[in-house]
Structures are given as C-alpha cells and as structure tokens.
Length: 327
Ligand code: UDP
Ligand code: MG
Image (cartoon, rainbow, N blue to C red):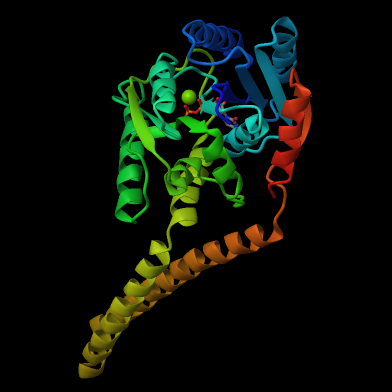
C-alpha cells in the first residue's frame, strides 16, 4: 500500500465529558492535514468505546451520523486502555496506511501530528511522540513514571523515554503487531521490538481537557507489572540470586548458633527463619506470577470482542474480521 490514509485511533472509557471537545479538535486537525495534502481525504478518526457506562457510545454514534470523518467501534465490555487501543488499531488495519493513537483527553498535543506524518512520509514506520516535559503531571505521577522507565531500562527492556501511547504506526508496522498474540499487552514495549525505521517527535504534555483520569491506581499498577513481567525474566533471576545469598547467610547463622547457647543467638536464628520464609514465599509468588501468566496465555482467549461499529465502510469491516482472526 502506498497511499497516505490516516486513522487517528482514540480509546475512550467514560469520556462523554471530554469527547465533544476532543472530536472537534481531531476533526480540525485531520482537515488541516488533508488541506496540506499530507493525508488522503479518506482519513478518519476512530473512537473505541471501551465498555463505557456514561453514554460515550451514544455520543460516538451521533458524531458518526454528523460527519463521515468519524468512525467508531464498541467493545463488549471494559478491557482496559491497551486492549482498547489494540482493538482500534486492528480495526483500522487494512483501511489505514498509517494510524496515530491518541488519548481522549487531549493531554498529547495534536499539533505534533504534522511532524509525525512528515516522518512517515519520509519513510519511517513508527514515530514515537515523547513528552519533552511533565510539568502538568502531579509530582507523584511524574516521580513514579520516571522511576518506572529507569527500572525497565535496568531490566534490559527497550522503551522510549517519556513515550506513552501517542504513536504513529504504518500499515506494515500494524501487520507486524498483529502477529504478536499475547493477551497481557504492553504496546510501548512491543513497538520497539517490531523493528523498522523509527523517529521520535517531542511535544509538551498538557492537562486533561475534561473529566478525571480514568487510570485508577489499580490499572496503573497492572500496566506497570505487565511491562516488567511481559518483557523480562529478570525478576526470576533476581530471586534466584537472593536465594543463593540467603543460603550462604543461613550457613553463617548456623555456625553462630552452634558456637554458643546464649538465648540472643537463638532469637537471631528465629528471626532469620522468618526472614528466609518471607523471601521464599516472595520468590514463589514471582514464579507463580509467570506461571499464571503462561497459563492465561495458553488459553488463547480472545482479547476483545467487538459488539458494535459505527460509520465504518465495507472495507473497514473486512479489516475488522482480520482483527478478530489475529488470535
Ligand atoms: N482508557 C480506556 N480504558 C480504560 C481506561 C482508560 O480506554 O479502562 C482510555 C481513556 O479514555 C483515555 C486513555 O485510555 O483515552 C488514557 O486514560 P487517562 O487519560 O485516564 O490516563 P492518564 O493520562 O491519567 O494516565
Ligand atoms: Mg490522560
């Protein structure tokens, strides 16, 4: 495919408050890109309703009736940001020459799209949008995010610093992504694995345009652990090393305990028993986590189910069938 049809894919979970503004901004941006001749007239915004409960889907449907520039799919239930985004990308596959994924709250500067599309036209398959600063995030979020990137790097995972999921992907990159069948998706970890020519575009991240963050602490922790556990086996090796150190420590303690009958020494031994028990349990937990994930992956459950579509052409619907068949 050699065209330049762009699909802007927007996962939406309870975004009824933000969508009216967001849809207008995206449509304006798409039209500007069309006028500039950078993207084709067939370019679209594709909203993915991730099982919202606040009328988000009704809103998406009414947008699709107002203008053919809007399209939408609805998942059968809430599956989380990463999966909703994947569903959108796979639905766009076949119709789009490139996709740009974007959050519904417009925290990511849509004006960075020009540079992203330019990089695509210049031959890049993946273009990462990276925040140049995070002033708009609360201190705790900023601190945890930066520490998390450092941890991932230290564990040997390839991640683009300060890049979330604002990313351009070419049709070729989407085809490659479709071959990754894992259900615990960490898209920003998989994108660098795909290879191809990449570029990074920097932008300043803004405040949420409306509503509150849909990423609860639980969802954020799940994303963070998916990142570490789906990309690296380092935790298991760490635990193994800790086990060896403990074994050595236990031998030393045994020698101390055998050397004298002082009660203090026995208390020391008791403490070490508890310590060792704790670490062994932790180790079991880590191993169990991987085993559990292997079990869930082995089931090959569908990652999402599309319940409804709006404003998609026949061609897109074919793409949708492909998406369903990727599992
Ligand atoms: N989102 C989603 N499903 C979820 C949670 C979030 O599709 O279960 C979407 C949400 O609508 C938004 C994007 O993911 O478009 C990022 O969420 P949010 O802006 O709330 O996260 P934050 O920027 O606070 O990390
Ligand atoms: Mg946000």
